Amino acid sequence: MTDDVSEYYMAEPAISFTSGAETDGLVHFLEISLFRKVDDGIQGYFFGVVGERLTWRLRDKLFHAVVHQEIGWFDREENQPGVLTSRLATEATCVRNVSGFQFAMLLEAVILIGSAFVIGFIDSWQLTLLMLGFLPLLLFGGYIE
Image 1 (cartoon, rainbow, N blue to C red):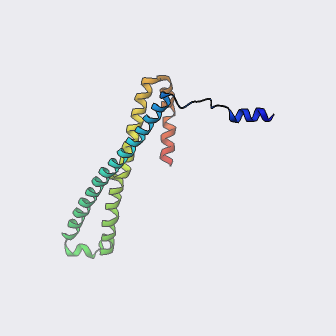
Image 2: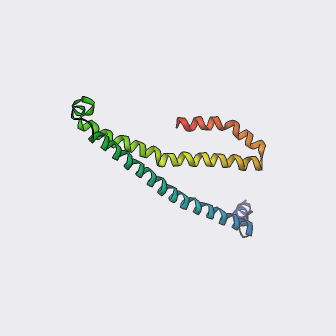
Image 3: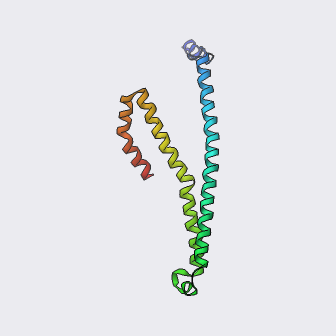
């Protein structure tokens, strides 16, 4: 019995990674992952810049709109300085969040789903139609999350 066990553990592996096909596949996966990391950095930078510029312009316009109001406008309960300062900070930040990272994620998801369907229809249209049938469930699950 020990001979069987030692033969099992000491045997040569069934899969050899010395052939060129596996090494080429590994190199391609490493290239793709490196490209994705560089792309994520560039995407984060540009969407961050766009979001910050949009936030700055929105805050600037809101500030000028508040400053140019008549004096009686500030006497109302909803236009107290604390309320206005709070709105100036929170609403612009909400716009930045929607226009920056979240928009980038939504755009990336739409592009990935579209390209997956194109590649899927080219490779196996039957499997892609099956995947298309489950897409509403996936979208509903993503919406709930």
